[in-house]
Image 1 (cartoon, helix red, strand yellow):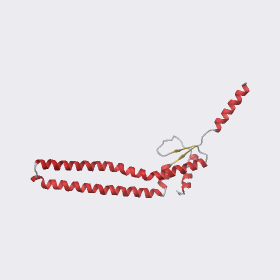
Image 2 (image 1 turned 30 degrees about the vertical axis):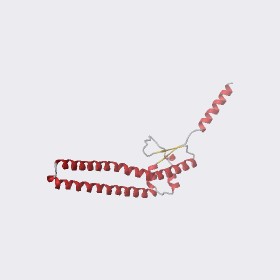
Image 3 (image 1 turned 180 degrees about the vertical axis):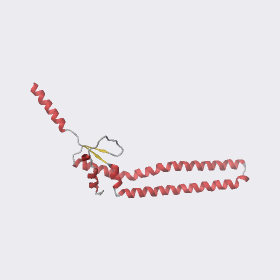
Image 4 (image 1 turned 90 degrees about the vertical axis):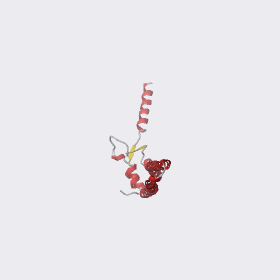
Length: 167
């Protein structure tokens, strides 16, 4: 009986030691920044920002024209006309502030949308490299804080090589 229990425990420990995982790391942000498609992404985001800026300039010109018109005609306006024009100007100020606030979020959304295919491709290549090299898990080093990372398990260069990117 003791022999059977010892044999079962031995099998359990052998199986447990064989089932250990191989964990690798990758610097995904470094790889994304070196991908040739990144230049196109940055250019599209910059063009989108310029488009938003030109739309804002139109709003700013409209605002300035209304303020100048109000100042020029203020002395001959009735109180009711003044209140109406002031409300229009205040509404334009609110619209401009809202546009300015939303502009940053819209640019970030545009950037994320343009980066999505790059991250998808990167994820596929990381999976290929991990499988080819026997990794069961790959952690990204970007944004995470590790106390220690053994460089032997960093697959960043393997992924760069697979993508054909030279350092």
